Length: 73
Image (tube, rainbow, N blue to C red; front, side, top):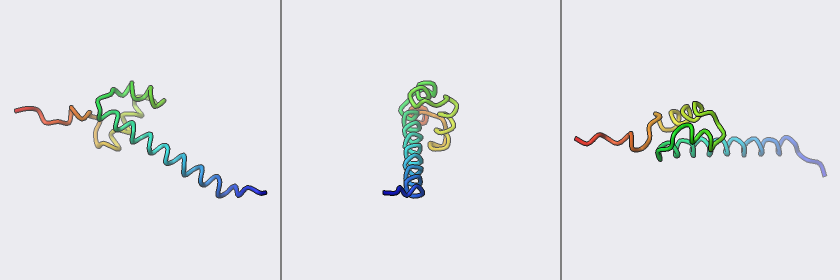
C-alpha cells in the first residue's frame, strides 16, 4: 500500500491549523476570565507578550471581562 503523502500532509497541516486556532481562542477566553498574561503564557507554552497579542487580535483589546465592565456611577 502506498501512502498519498500530499493528502496526508494536507490533512495534518489542516489539523495543526485548527489546533492553533483553538489554542488562541482558549488563550483569549482565559484572559477574559481574568488570568494574567504570564499565567496564560506559562499554561499555553507561549511568551506572555504573544498571549497579549493573541488577546488583542481576538478580543479587540487586552482587558479582562471585569475591566471591560463600565464603572458604577
